[in-house]
Image (cartoon, rainbow, N blue to C red):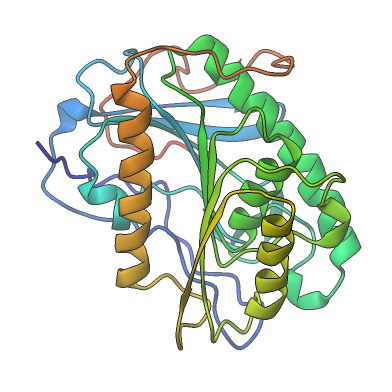
Length: 294
């Protein structure tokens, strides 16, 4: 049976305006009829990052579940997902961390925007935050029963983080689903080994230009990495309903593969770092629909 995401908005903000084109909130928060018993949340802090942990579709929030990390774009912040997550039938555990840098209207994963052309500085920040997030994934994989390898998805700068994790930690991450994203050259390892990637991009994107991403995809493929790539004609820096449907198909397939293998695996390939510092009852789930990360 399909489930709907609860009306649970972490907070409401206006998008950070990097250029005359506004970066889109992704995924959109959604208000719908819902089964509160199948939406569980808790929040905690890990190595200075505020994290919302949300279980969707499961009666028991401590049951073995696939693990998905969802990364917001620049100028946005954590939000309980609507869009493609709304109609996925397979239960999942979602980690929704908040970017460490404050920008106008929200948070970011880097101090600089891709539109500024300061790609070396962007790469430094992406490498640092992807390292911290890899330790977060390892920590949660050790603490929660997890089915299969984790999935990371994100839009724009969040997609850049997910893609950086795929090439820097290919043995830890099982799949990356970056949207409107790319990895700057200084963040690319040699030799170039990547976790599987399924990505899409609008051809009219004026913030994250598509041509460098095409070149990056070709580089990954030449190195014999598995990349599924889709372009959407005339689409700017946004996620259209058609793109949301494609992401839903990709994510549902990944979750079913992990669920129906029927085995619990630890996701840790590195030391999990410092223990998570509890916040707002991090050790106990709640179905109360309140803000989790401000």
